[in-house]
Length: 233
Image (tube, rainbow, N blue to C red; front, side):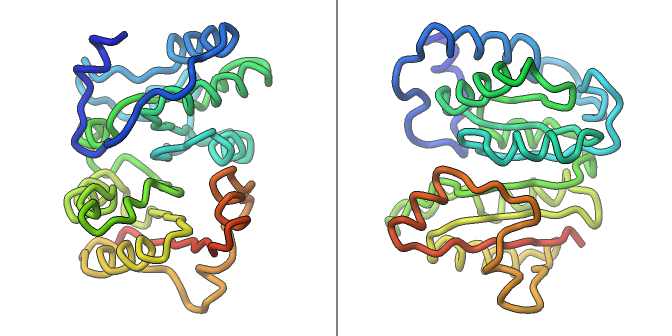
């Protein structure tokens, strides 16, 4: 495992990959999830709909799902949609694994990837994804670290390549400088259009939004979340 972690790509992932040591039950659930649902990139890139054990109508991607609160809700809300959840942080993936284990096993419309999302994005076929969600990514608040933020021109190019025309890129954050940063980068990119007609379009959470532990902490500490939606034009 240590050797595998050293070989992982790090273009867009900075910081630690492992937190507290997993309990045996967590470790078993994580192993079961990865054995069942981990996407391996050692084959030619297929239609992502074929990655799932049952037919799906479309495929969405959530990058950095944290504890999996939103991803789990969406799996239930949209059973005919395939979801790819990306989370390099081992403890986040383990939290998702424990949750699906408690609910009776891995849903047929879930696949996961536990490494740098940029590698997966480069592997996916062009115009194959119906939506990308990026919620509460690491804000890297110090100006000297802003270049580490996941939203940048290169990654927006990646999003534009894999998203279908009319697909949505959704971004949520409680850090105002990152919200402004994302708006500026997306408005400067020819492939994206901000879908907002009034303040409620970014102040109110998305339909079916379950909240996350990161969001709850932000609100407790007095920060106001923003919910942005961009259309792939």
